[in-house]
Amino acid sequence: MKVLVVEDSRRLRTYIKAGLEDVGYAVDSAGDGEEGLWLAQSNEYDAIVLDLMLPKMDGIQVLQQLRKDGIGTHVLILTAKDTVEDRVVGLEQGADDYLIKPFALEELLARVQALVRRGYGVKSSQIVIGSLFVDTTKRVVKRGGDVIDLTPREFALLEYLCMKQGQVVNRTEIEHHIYDDLVEPMSNVVDTSVYRLRKKIDRPGDPSLIKTRRGQGYVLEEDQQ
Image 1 (cartoon, rainbow, N blue to C red):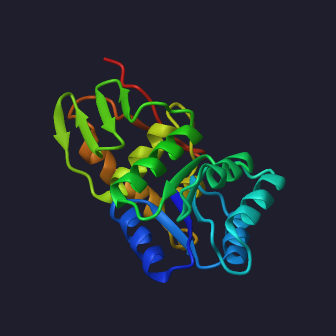
Image 2 (image 1 turned 120 degrees about the vertical axis):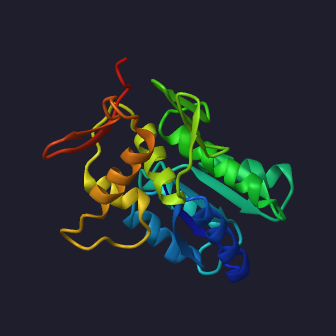
């Protein structure tokens, strides 16, 4: 999943970015409102973490412009102002959640994850597809009760396919949502990642949960037992 972090404090921005990347998110970041708005207008994100007090353009102005542009990406507001009035203003302008500074990284990660799920219409952090069990909060994967160890990038790929369960996703979509750097044209990085994920989650003798649609992409579908 891809997240945008807009925070003027370099130290806090780096801290949040590292925390998100450690659990498998692809992250872009900006240190002022103008750059943050440009990134949000130029890319598709699964969630945006937006500070209110920003140089050049404050968080409320960024939020207003995003909603005016019809960009509905879910936004988590960061603020040092703990008043009802401040929270109401942000929510009225289209924010989806609030987090008061200082905060625990674990809480921020949980709130971002909740916004990501909401964006895909998934209410629970626990996803069951046939014999596959995925807990997107605890980041636990099981197949038939057996725990499967995935790297953060492999988990991010599986999470995205789970969110798009039953829908064909092409390589470009996967590249955009899973990788924070541009993938070289004609690269087989997505195919290689899918191959490795299949080896871990599929069981010998059973059909693969991740189906290939030739010329279209991949789809995660319930296994038929």
